[in-house]
Image 1 (tube, one colour):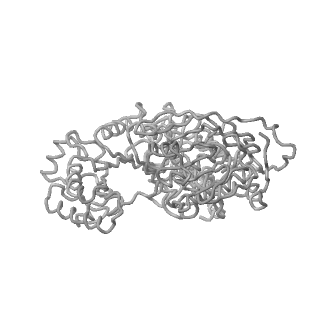
Image 2 (cartoon, rainbow, N blue to C red):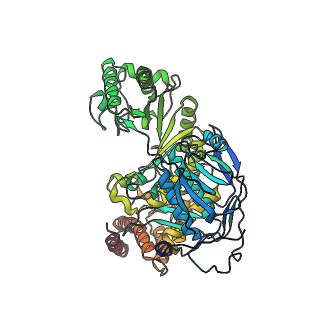
Image 3 (tube, rainbow, N blue to C red):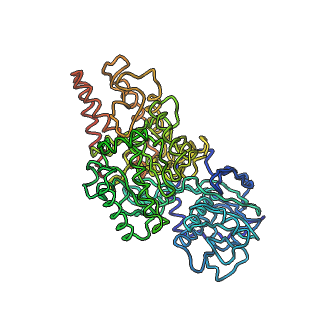
Length: 633
């Protein structure tokens, strides 16, 4: 079909798009595939999308001369996009207007066509209908009925395109997926320094025909998805919501975690755990749980979980007897929260009582099962993050994977609390902690989804001043968000998402930064290089020495490994092709390396009394100070 171009791309949008032009694109980008993992029930099935044709870049109109236009041909059900009107409900949901605005904006940026927007109080020849509208057909209603949680349905019916969700947040996520699949939009983040920016690009894809029989229903197997990095940043822009697909509307009473001492009136987050077989403790906790639920009538969860920094529960004979019977210290906790859950279920039928399986309570009990209205949040604090959770050759993870399997067999509401950074550094006030865990995110989340985990929270950078992300927090949040949204993506898709982000965010430095990360990660996996100090694993709390080899296999101090990493950074620093924004991002990452290098060279110089190595360490301190000044740390 010939295009009916209006080409009304305003100067502001063109200028904005050009300011974000990519210096290097990676072929094989995600989103061009025609298969999608879809969930219409608890089981995950594969739905095949009708094929979208991709034409040759030379098949454009004779007057095509605008380099900002990325998509020269877009039809929906045979009709050109210029014939369409975006339609929202007359009384829109909280995200419907935002979803429609994104559609109008990015259709304009990708094609040069300004589509009209209205409500379902009007009609149009061809409509893109967003949310639940007056024009919903029986086919649309049936598709929406299949959607779970914040998933969506996307279909063409009667010449109209419908994007709708059971929740209006799901409608927004459907629009996000539409923009990515068909318009080539990639959203990498919503905040950067030295000034706020929308970090996105639109991929080149000059012909797209969306067929008239398109029908896709998708619900993520992981219903609740959030990273602390996104929580810090999502007040600045809507884009981190796209970046992380976070479901932030789950509401807690009594706080989110480590609540037992507060509820028992025996102390705070770090106090000893109270006795769970003491009737007075039980009645006090029950009283305070009810008070909290009265205070927060919209709460979906009330948390009753162990205090932090403690290695055991109550050691009285009654509690220890329950532990012995259950084969795990989690036994007294599950019995305690089950009793609370039973006492409140009639008054609060929509509230789940949540507890932690954390440190000493990770192992599931062998007798008592969590009640129907009890949720268990299993924490990965004991895991190795170099290896995937289900790696049978990693002793720590093999044990933990057994815990996941055990809880999944007895618990109806299994959640995961995991970590994206090195808390040895974070807890010491150092935002530069290195954790080589990028490459195992996909396999780990797939394992969780395979075992009925319906909620994942990723804890990492969690303070506003951490936005500089010297530990590549943006990349971590982006990859976690992508995988939590689709745990069943392929390794090739995951690699493409990673490469896309690195090439855009860091420019020509992206591949070199990946080489730096993968060098450390790859050497952690190479057991021929281990010595007693570096056994090939990393943890939530982990010394730098496990990653950056100060010792050879004989246990002798050496700078050989750090020198190899320094060669990569010398290549990065020699680049002269980066934009100012990309230079800033590279400087943030450099802060991490310079900090690590200055510490390790100084440790080696102190052990060897080598003045030349001490000078190198001092030089890295100077580079660290200068990089921090450039990024505002």
